[in-house]
Every structure is written in structure tokens, then in C-alpha cells.
Image 1 (tube, rainbow over the protein chains, first blue to last red):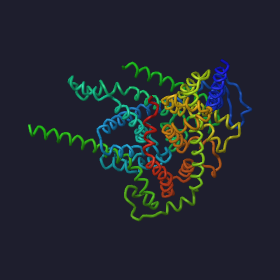
Image 2: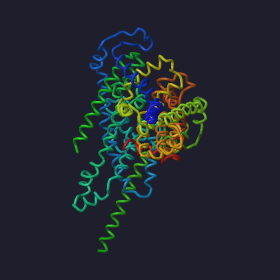
Image 3: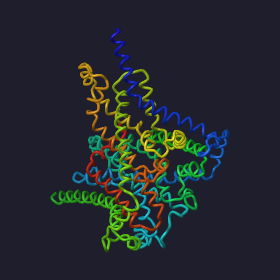
Image 4: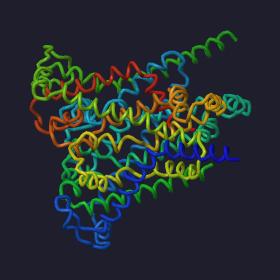
Length: 297
Length: 281
């Protein structure tokens, strides 16, 4: 009995010892900043003189809810994400379906498709900026085909930045989704398709009745990650826009706005509030997404 | 009968050709920007502006020579490497420790800790950006390397990945070692670490890439040019000289990208598996 007690307690000690990195990380880099975020959102606090912080109650929150630029940035990112998610879903699922059919050389294609994933956003954006710019090959091609009449400076446009960035991000990230979908497709039991064929189901019916429902875990995972990551877009716009997101604020994302408020205007309290508002929006979107995808089954 | 068979065969062949054709077109779209970068890095400035799409008329390495004198790329490489390797090693070690406790040891509060790990993955990083900056600023960590290493040393996501892997290792195996007189640390070090090599490769690749490719945090926390990382150096280079010195910009971009691509080609299997296995169990 004593021996047993001793054994359990030593396992407990080891357990906490091994968990220590997480416990410390959780306390120092998650809990405390989370508490600080709420605290700062009720303060008018300047990074340069933090001792002069004044309590402003829910002033920052009211300002945030009324701030047209903040909502413009939220609109922009939703506009961007709706295009990005649809486009990437189509490309990655389509290519996964094609890759599944390929026996020889599938590895080569997979490797090539992963090139954009491993390069940094910084370098990819430098290349893309030039490619899609007014002197770049994409616009020259569109001019010769006749889709464009004159070269455009899309970063100064009212509506173009977000769709164009969505195309960039699809190019950059589709391979991850593709490989996740491919894994899902390969794990689907082939007999299901055989049985469906015997029942006279066509390719489309098979796709909608077997493939899509069985890919649900992968789709749910990919969509959740898309929203959490995509809503926080920063480097892409920071590389090519000023901190206002261009003359029409059409390149302004919430994180760029937060950066501008926190590190350019130095109002950390307000920037904290923006971070909290954005986190609330992301959480609401994630919950809605789960509800929609789970209802469909 | 005969024609029907050959028709079907041809149809199959045609379909196969079509699949390969589409995949190849997509490959070209994916690779083209890199080819574009590469050929432009061997041109002179005016030629880049006027003929960006064609192969260089005169191949030149002047862009590379010039950029190496304006931007200290070896130093940037060294800084990036120092930060990313530290982050990677710490992630592999610390996260597997926690994952070991959460999968193979029994102690009160274990399930709660695991739930907190899972729940924390849903917190958007941006929420903590400003308060973390305020905290680290107060600590005097701004403009140090540890500000980029320590907060990135533990990751809920990596703990989750390793834990999922460890649950597949049978306990009898570990008990045998315990009976032989190994304490928990020895079990962890001599058995868990070697057995979980595949998942540790995944964790290493994901954390290295995150750290290596990050622009945001170095931008926030580093002040001295001598401490800049590759991404930050490249960014500051781009903003300092709008329009001019295009040849240097392309040369720099090439110099930053090529090593990554080479490493990727050597370790591609691990890279792709790292993403394929992501969070689906």
C-alpha cells in the first residue's frame, strides 16, 4: 500500500514536471496577455508613456464599434476570404481528384505544387507585386487578349486589391489543402464506389453522395483553419500598401489597422480593443461555419 | 466488339492524357513566378524594366555582386538560422515533453491541461499581439533574439500532434523499461524520443518554417540592422529603394529563395507529410 502510494505520487511529480513547459507558457504567454488585453481595452494607454495611462471605461469599445475604418477593414477581409475560400476549395479539391487518378509522376506534381508553400510571403509578394503590376507579364497578356484596355494600377483601385490578393493566396496555399483532401480521398473505401456503380449512380451522384460527405472532417478542418488564419492577413498587404491600405482603404485589413493604431498612432488601448473585436468576429464565424457544415449531414 | 474495345481504350488514354495535361498546366502556373524571378536576377536594371518576360540578352551577375555589398546577406542568414534553429530545437524538446506527460503519465489535472491545450488553439494570435508586445517591452526584451525564440518555443498545435502519435505506442513497451529501472526521464529520453522520430520531423519542419518565414514579429521586435532576419532585411531593402536597383532586389529575392527550395527538394517527403498528417486524427 505504501509502495503503491509512493509510486502514484512519483508519477504525479513526473507528470507535472513534464507538463511544466506548457504550464509556464500558458500562464506567461497566454493567460497574462489575455488578461492584459482586456485591461488595456479599458485604458487610454500610450506605448511611450505607459505610466500616464488613464481609465476610459468602455470608451475604446464604443469607438471601435463606431469606427468606419475598422468596419471597412472587416468588410475587406470578408470580401477577400469569401473569394479565397471558394477559389482555393475548387482548385485544391479539383487537383486532389486529378492526382488520385495519376499513378506515375504524382510525386513530381505534388512537389512542384508545394513550392509556393515553402517560400516566405515576403519573397512571394515581391515577385507577385511585379508580376501583377502595370508593367508585368500578367497585365501584358491581358492587354494582348483584349480583356484589359489599359494597364491598371490595381493597388490604387477601389475594388480590385482584395480579389487579386485572394488569387495570390490561393496560389500560395492551395497545396496544403490539396494534400489534406488527397489523404481523405485515398482513405475512402473503393467498394463504396463499386456499389454505387452497381446501383446505377453516375460520376456526379457519386461525388455528391459519397466523396463530399466522406471528406467532411477534412473540409471542416481546412475551413476552420482558413478562417482563423485568413482573417489575420497582414504581411501581404503590409508589403505593398501604406498603413491606410491605399487611397480608398481597399487594401486595409483588420490586422493592418491594428498595427497602424498600435504602433503608428501609439494608442495601444484602442489597438487592444480592435484585437478583441476581431477575435470575437472570428469566433462567431467559426461557430456559424461548424453549424452549417454539421447541419448538412 | 473489337472497335468498342479499342474505343474504350482510347477514351481511357485520352482521359489520362487530359488529366496529365491539366496537372502540367497548373505546374507551369505554379512555377512560372520562380522562373521569372530567376531570369530577372541575371539581367541589368533597365532590361528588367523594359523586357521583364524574356531571357536575359546579356547574362550578368552584377545584381548579385551589388546586393552582397549593400545588404549583408551572410549576416542575415546567420541571424535567421540562429533564431529558427533555436525555435525548432526547443519546440521538438519541450512539446514532446508535454505530449509525453499528457499521453503516458497519470496525474490529477491531466485532462484539464489537455483540454486547455486544445482550447487555446482556437485563440487567434492577433488577440495577444498588443498585450504581449506591451509585456515584453516592459521586460526589456525588445531588440533581443530571445524575444523571437522564447514565446515561440511551445506550441499547442505541436503538443497535440505529438500526443496523437504517442497514444499509438503501446504502454507495455514503456513498462518493460520501467521495470528495468529506468526513471521517467530515461524512458522519455531513450524510448519516446527515438520512437517518435516521424512526428518530431513534422514538428521540426513546421516550427522551422514558421520562424524562418515570419516577417511580422522581427518587424515588431528588432531594431538594430545587424540583428535583422532575412525576411526583414529583404523587406527593408524593398522599401528603401522603390523602383531603383531592381537588379539588386531580384538578386536578393533569388538568394533568399534558392536555399529554401534546395532544402525542400532534399526533404520534400517530410515536408509534404508534415502537412498531409496535419490534425486529422
